[in-house]
Length: 120
Image (cartoon, rainbow, N blue to C red; front, top):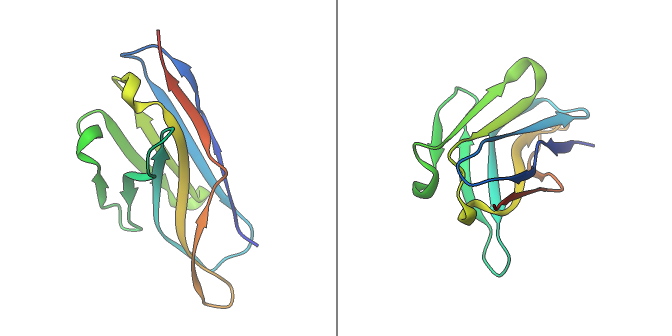
């Protein structure tokens, strides 16, 4: 069974920074694209950033220039560095990964989410 565990959320003032981490644990054959989504109250879940196994990244327009995404393949970890945070970045942030199981089946796995609140 594969699990994703997020950490690093919290309360930060506007203009501040946070770094989210997500670690994949369990037995699997490969991890492909990893990414972060977020969902604010009353809004749909949206893609924030994603990074391929080869390191290619894409970002939502709303976070370009402020957020960066990186991954450590050896540690099965993906990071989201969030700078110049705005109140509208407030949301629950979810980690996701495209994983190939031991049975060689591709599945999407989601973490439980971590709350990010940007407020003075």
